[in-house]
Image (cartoon, helix red, strand yellow):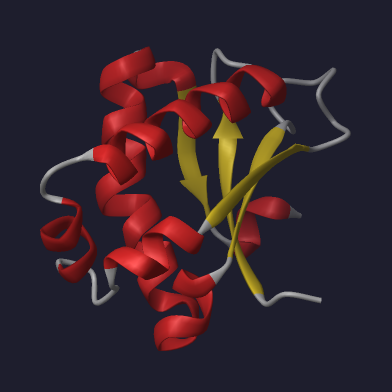
Length: 119
């Protein structure tokens, strides 16, 4: 199994499938960007790491109750192997997430949850 890291967020206005489509579009845009090398290097990755990265969105089963609902973002591929996953997590937080929020509204995805918040 390919190594991966996960980041949890409160559910926002987008459902899991809608969020997956939006993230896929943002990743496509990033990979085609003229400054891809600089974006990748800003978090300790290479452009190749970013091109090999996959992002998979999972919704929690508590989707009926918005207070308990959350979204899990699974990052895999070259970016996870690089720097033990720290680069992939930083790339999510500093590059993908801000672009996602600009493209789909700030409330498209909720705030990040820490381990204690998932119980």
